[in-house]
Length: 399
View 1 (cartoon, helix red, strand yellow):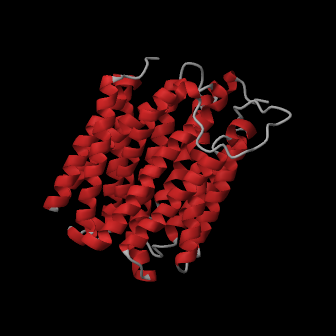
View 2: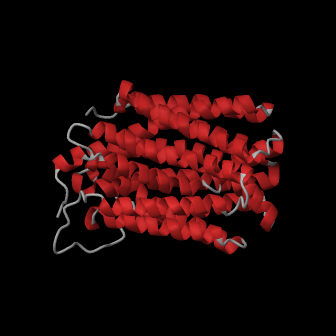
């Protein structure tokens, strides 16, 4: 049964605390971003294999979402989040003792499992832990924690790897310590799900979207796919591009470049309050398109300033569209299926963060990283423009 009254939750802002834990877990998923060049030197593998390693993480996320996306609706949020923390710890241990590709793959896979469990479960928990009347603020807090954590990972790893000893070990030791503290927090967190007895069987749900949510879900999922494709570009490929074409080999700078995209995403999420969730989705897709055009120009001109500008503009659009997607899907999903429906939205997002990135790596083998990036940008521009045009013609139903 549900523990923790509304009064207790209002006295103690558990939704903020849960969001901090969310951010800590997500930071661990992007810690390797500025380190891939060091792994290439240590182990000796191609840029294509970098994208495959990255895709292994996304595959773990998708698997967890498809298999266990609704488990927190049945077991409760807290047990699922504690499991995610344990998997994240095991991932960090793999990186600490990494000695070649096998542990690198296993560590990324476990990190993906952890992120998959947190993406739906933590988003739902943060929203449900909010005091009455603050659900909108909590939804922003949850999505900001997701994006903020993803952005802080490269910055933390870049700073520690550039200026401290043991660049491939220290970032994960620091993260492991944070995860231990986070586990204590989740253990003390109030449960928000009324567990039913006898408990329904745990079955992999796949990507199940309730019928009443589908009209909203499809354009939201396509916009999430496009936006997360951009994030995949920056977290898997951008450090290699700036090192190869722009002669930027400072790991901290690479981390800051990636962070700027995620900070812009957070800013975009905050802007949704001014536009409303219905209008924010097509507007976010349009802004994302403008940013992608700038990124394409940066690839052609080999300009760091234009690349950062394009990343920031694209991040604004991605954040605006992503928060609108989560808000609209959460609004129309039935309460008993909310966690599973949000998880399905994240499946679409993480397909976007993985498949196009592997495509970039494969095409780059034949035509080079810059040309592959231009092809990628053109494809995502077509998709985001199509979603924006569709939503202008057929707006989502108002709240």
